[in-house]
Length: 129
Ligand code: HEC
Image (tube, rainbow, N blue to C red):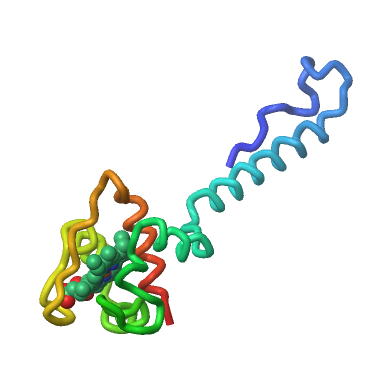
């Protein structure tokens, strides 16, 4: 990666030390990278709250069956299935029926719960154990 174009013999530096500049650039680049990593990580700790806000908790709980299956049961069933996140996000969005029993899951209103939130919730509940 090209971190800095400032060279120590750069006349523009006019005798100022060049290494702190270079060091600062590297630090800033590193900070930017870690900030990006944090920003793109799914907020796992926030997801219980997100499930409550999105209305999932009316029918789902982490480890006991309610109206719908528990997150644990769902995680177990789809373990190792590569297309599970996309499949389940679609079911949450459009509603689902006949997979777990007679009771259907109603569609989730995009005005209340957007696609990114659905994906975050599905990724989170698939990790339930
Ligand atoms: C009104 C009750 C209700 C609400 C609200 C609800 N669910 Fe469900 N959910 C169900 C039922 C019932 C099933 C089982 C449907 C079936 O048998 O196919 C289910 C199934 C699921 C499944 C598994 C789907 C499958 O095909 O295996 C996931 C994942 C899921 N729900 C996530 C969510 C999330 C996330 C939310 C909140 C945005 C939510 N649910 C809100 C009742 C609900």
